[in-house]
Structure formats: structure tokens, C-alpha cells
Length: 389
Image 1 (cartoon, one colour):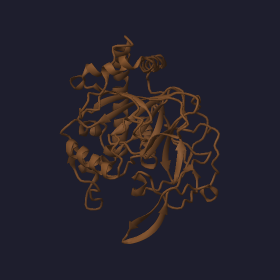
Image 2 (image 1 turned 30 degrees about the vertical axis):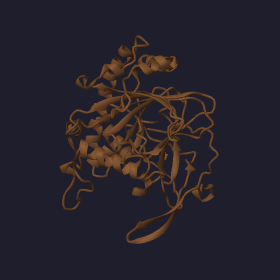
Image 3 (image 1 turned 90 degrees about the vertical axis):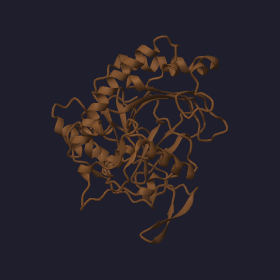
Image 4 (image 1 turned 135 degrees about the vertical axis):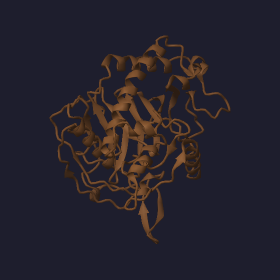
């Protein structure tokens, strides 16, 4: 696990915002990446050193995976495209943002820039106590080490459309490589405690305390995202209706499988994710898969489809996936933030006009989820992601 170091410099490539990157499997052009240093700004902290990589530094010399070929229609013409699976150049990593910076405007600028160019970033000095994060990891690990019968006491109900509860890896689904636990944590009126484990006995206490800190962090991030769009700090929170928070715990035992969660974008607004220190999250940018470095106590922020629509495409919904370690169990704790049911998912009126027409239809949350899931089913990607990362 890497320790946060505020003295190293970050570099990044110019973003290529092609819609077909959002497909599953992802498509990409024959890549040419010209990396250049990112101007250092207050609030954005430099990168950490990358781990070992077998990928070459430039796409021109990278080995391409040609396991999928297809055609893409664009501007009424057809061009050949092929799937590319480059890993990231060693000098580039996901932005790291220090939330302790006293200049809120510069923090908001750094966060907005990362959201526009990457759709993902890490935050440090976020105010969540390290001891609380340690306890969160401990109760999660203890739950998944219980006998199957005890875990199934909070299992997803058979035939239920709800995703809440414990779910085991399905050997018949190649896209299902992890056991998981999933339930709502806020607001209190949305919580069904029947899906919260009673063992470990302190699971509820730890989760409720973690929820208090995560809602506070989420609201700070929403405020910065709003400022980055030139809006008042409360705008995104108001549009989400305050938000509905759901906690997932993903359990990836050691495996020779390369992929734990296939490439996808998140259907929710955004996700706040921590791990047990075993790396595996990757994000897609500039025809490359970038490893997200595991930084002690950092929280990874992954923007989803709802934020992309609210910002009228200014903020990215990042394509990402997770890999499995051959020797170590990897666990992640994603907190997913959604609109409150009935709220409108669509471009904010302040961001559209004659010179910038809306790029997305405005729908209620229920209509949006129905359409989004139907489209994923058409792509044979009906396996619902529970904040895999």
C-alpha cells in the first residue's frame, strides 16, 4: 500500500471523450497518446509512483488485444475500430486531491478539472478517522468469513426486484466473480435493517458511524462539483433531493481470473470507494487502462451516468473495471449516491441554452433507471453492478 506523498508531481494526457468508450466491451481507436505535464494547481496533489507494469510507455509500441473486432458508424461514415487494452503509461495516474486545502475555490477547481478530464479521482485528508476505516474493514471481513448459513440470513430475497442483501458468486454467470453485501444506509426512512448483518455484533454501530462521515464527505464533494460548474454549492445536492446512500461490500477471493468486474460505467450519480489495501481498480482514459494506486486512507471518487447527465456531459462517467489478485483476497466498500425517487435526471437548466443545447433527455429517476437497464440488457450487460471496484 502506498502512503500519500504531497511532494510528487502529477502528469496526465488530454482526454478523448468518445461515446463509444462507454460501451461494454469498450471500443477504441488505434491509440496515439501524447502525455504532457498537468499544470499544478492548489488543491490538486501530485501522483504517487506507479507499481510494476509490463506495458510500454507509448501506445505505438503496445501490444494490442484483438479479441473483439467491430465497426462503428460516425458522421454517416463507417470506420474500422478494434478493442484496445493498453495499460497505463508509468508516469500517469488518477488525480489526488487534498481536501484540507483552506482555499475552497481552488479545491473546487481541482476537483472539477479531474471530473472533466478523468471522471475519477482520489481524495485525501477527508476527515474520516483511520480507526473507523480499520473497524469498517474488520467487520466486513468478519461477515464474509462467517459460515454460509449465517450470511444467507440476510440474503437477497428470492424473486425480489430489490438488490439489497447478501449475494454469493454465481458460478453460472461469468460476469459474477464476487460475493457481495448491499443495503441502504441513508436517509433513515429508506433503511431496511433486516438486510443488515447481526453478526458481527458491532456491524450496525460501525456502519452508522461510517455513514455519518460519508454523508458529510459526499456533501463536500457535491458542493465542489457544483462550484466547478459555476453554480451554487447546494445545487447538485438539491437536484439529487439530498441523495439516497447505499453501501456495498465486495469480496473477491484469490483467483487466476484476470477480471473481477467487467468494464462498465456506474448507473448512479457517483461512488465513494475504499479498499482493504489490495489494488485492482482500473479506469479507462485516452485508450489506456490506468491502475488506481492504493493509497492509505484515501477515498476513490467514481463519477457515474447521473452526474454526467446533470452536467450536460461536462463531467465524465468513467469506464472502469476491477482485477483479481492471484494470492490475496481483495475487498472494497463502495458507497453509492443516487437521486431520490421522483427527482429529475437530466441537464441542469443553468447549463443549457442556445449555444449549448441539452445532450440528454430529462427523465424521472424511475424512467431513467428503466431505460438505462433496458439498454444494458440489449448489450447483454444485464448483470447489475453494485459499485464494483
